[in-house]
Image (tube, rainbow, N blue to C red; front, side):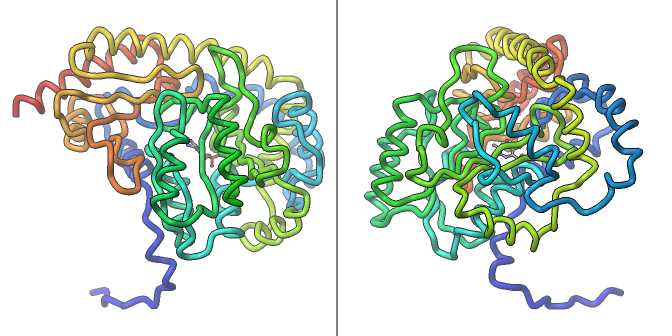
Length: 401
Ligand code: PMP
């Protein structure tokens, strides 16, 4: 019989709250019946350029130096290719600002490790990407949830809530473009106002933008890091997870050059360097000129899928729900008006053969029990229709029970 040992946890271990998004996803992996998966935030399996990557692997991964340690700030060839990829975009940058990371999550963790002390006030959007807010919690942050509407974070509410809190935030965490989970994009006017407030308060901005390159409608907006122009400090977190493949675990952060030495020390204490074979694959992908074509195909497909989801929602949920209209990215957000609790809906929906993530998973304080995040990106249109039909059946079953 194993004995129960009382483990001598560090105080910060209490902040390791785990992710409902990830636990729902694990639960989903265990199901054996036919499920339309509108839950996960992964690119479409068929959109992952596996054949191109396999061709690159055959050449690049047969070299023995592909298995060495790499420079902490990133393998020089990928570092250079990334600078080239960003040239002429709103994220254009220089070598002394760029550090390659193990995906976006490591960028968020590095920021919090360097800047967040226990008790620091950190603004998060409501709803937000809770794996991001959980990172701040794991360093002891006190979170301030600020509502999001169709134009992104409500900056007037931000000013009011900060005034009510009686102290300024150390950092403002935002997902400004095609937000996870709502799909909303922070308007240009609000981008300026958010930066003005951050400047006034001396707050940093944690600008997490994994989906910006997946715009399929409307005009691109300048990034916060470009608009901020160095004041306030904007710490930009980016990733290849959504535009190429999440399993590669490669992303990057862009910040002021003064911070880079400390960033490198912090990353060395975590993992020494980002996975070198994955960096070599991405280097081949970028320098082979594959990214642009790949993005063009992805954008067109995701637009088709969003439209399919809207059509299905109009058909099956027109009488009981409202939903958002993202111009890019992976997700839309459905709010139920008929009093059904989305957490209770989750197991019923799973039995009916459709999966989503309940809205409360995107609020550290458990708001949004009436909402659902649906991912339109990873499922073909006919299956989206079927999934939304099943979802309505689950809602009706629950409403009757
Ligand atoms: N930020 C947001 C807003 C995300 O949606 C995700 C992925 N779901 C991440 C960060 C993490 O990205 P990665 O998988 O590259 O760590």
